[in-house]
Length: 263
Length: 341
Image 1 (tube, one colour):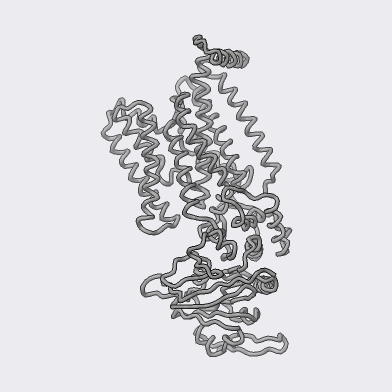
Image 2 (cartoon, one colour):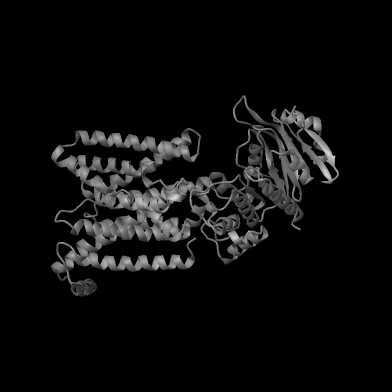
């Protein structure tokens, strides 16, 4: 198991404009080996929060620390060695093969003027194998399905060998089977020691993952804790502005979050 | 997906074609030369140079060394430079429809050349001014987003449009005040592109810029792949975006500016050759960039050889590259129609 890494946030504030506060003085600690599901209504700023963790947006105040070092003062390459990012499905303008795409995950470990060698292609292929998508390796990235692209993006993050993998709505645009598949992958990544921080629209996914939850509400306040402690019927109903039921289902062996029948 | 084997095959074919075309170009023209005589002349001229006896070169040696070889090398250099810079710009702007003109380098260079023509400067003045104003336009385009504190690609494209449009109007003013029979026709002729005036000393000035920029860009070609995924993707892969985008834009703009300064503006190459390259060897820039350079060199050499042999009057290059390039582009789109979104 790799050394434990920690991302901490200290009094982070971020706003788009003076009127639109996204993050209001939030602090947190996320560790590798944990899954953190970020929940929140549309427009609360889940993706923005994730981007703050990846040092993609400048904060108004406060700071994100990576193993105690201020992320803004770290060279991008050093950040990329610790944090991998799986974006929402992108459509590249050019036609790369899956393996050409995945091998770019090795970039933080290579010199600026160098290009991937056999060892890097080996790492890429191993990541592709880890995701069980060997059959896609030489296919064109633009000609595979959304679910496959998601897996390819995760493979690239694995080739990056980070401590944390950030995923921006990894289940968006996927059919139900593929959503569950991605969540299973997330779960197994945790078991391998990765820290996975993901945003999701579905509170039930956070229950399925059975680990940390971070709820970001519209006023920019973040509440964190174990899913079983933080996810409560009343709070969830309030957060999403609709009635939601939370109950234990024997046949599933877990708590379920669902909406009741319409009147 | 094209394989490594296909890449080697394509590159070998391109280099063989480049050598053959160069030899043909050396021999044909208003003064046609038998290939055997050409080789003999190259041998004898080199010997004369080595001996340093100051022996006068023959007429044939003059044609070969003063006119044809610089012209052939010039065409190859310029074609390669424009294609390379087109390939780089397309990756930086994540858009296969971008050409190096997008930040105003060509219109700026035209203003520089036209100014030199109006001032009655020498060919060297014209080249220096074209280079300087072309590069200055690009720097201006990159300065506007900084002033507005918005470093997005879109902002850069928009400011490029502003600078390019402004330079076009300045060029309009220069054309308007130019003396019709002499200056105006020179400006128009310059804008249509030609490598006729490329001499050995021109090449000597431009070669260092060309070689330095090309080597750096080829070394960075894998990073271009990452850049073409988008800004956030590149950042999360540890790329120093500001630095990489800055250096690639400056290097490729210098390439275009140096090419345009000695040949005038030549359209289409920077746009279609990278497309053709991707079709042959795939999108991976480590393969595509060298391939586009060889293709661009070959393409412009072919165009120039046609330009100076088809009619008794030299056909300006932009006319040919447009007449031949546009249908090629249409064919490329037809071949890739399923993938164009």
